[in-house]
Length: 302
Image (cartoon, rainbow, N blue to C red):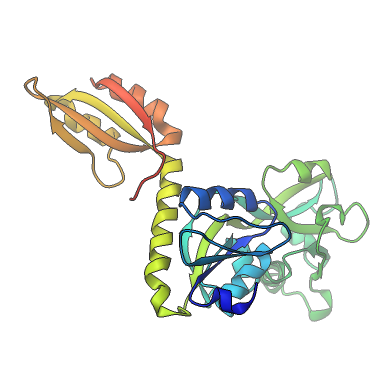
């Protein structure tokens, strides 16, 4: 695809593979961004908006958004920090998936079982910048000399094997479920940071005429995320018990309250977090609510 085909289009970078890729595609579908990606092509045109999707490694996306011509992107919060792009990109929205922790890990039963034990030893990681920042603070606190400071070595993959293969005394790596860490005989002794997928844009807009479209896409994605997080709870309750019920269901902003034909009874509709809905229903019944119903959301604007 030549550059002329991209002129006037908003460029939106998506991870081309890895832990965020599938969920990003589901997010685009929910936001009604329609496209057909041809095999082996990393750029495709959206059919119902002046947008071009660019499929890139997640680690490269902050640089393309911050320094290049890409307007929007989805990547991990950790990747932005690792690329030193905090000032060049703005995190518009946390997306609620891809959650994991960047942790310091050591062999179970090894000689080093605290971060201070690791100071001055060998650390292997794919997050060289973040590991260097973290252990520099440890080295400074322990007042280690230049010769005795912690050694950080970069590897692009198989970080969890570095200790068993004699390359490192400890590692810094992402932990999601912890299965890979435990299979390698490692356990975490410290957390460098918590991370998740985020929607980012350039701090300085490339083309001011695209700002309305950026805002539209951001609003749609925000609605998809909210629809996956919340459900609508509907119930009837006597006015005397309304205060207790709305204390349980304050909603994102406020519940919708409508009078019923029966005197002193009202109907309440409110958004509640999906993960808490069973307890909320139980608590509502306990304070006198009746006809408690839950409805899933396909999409919304909040």
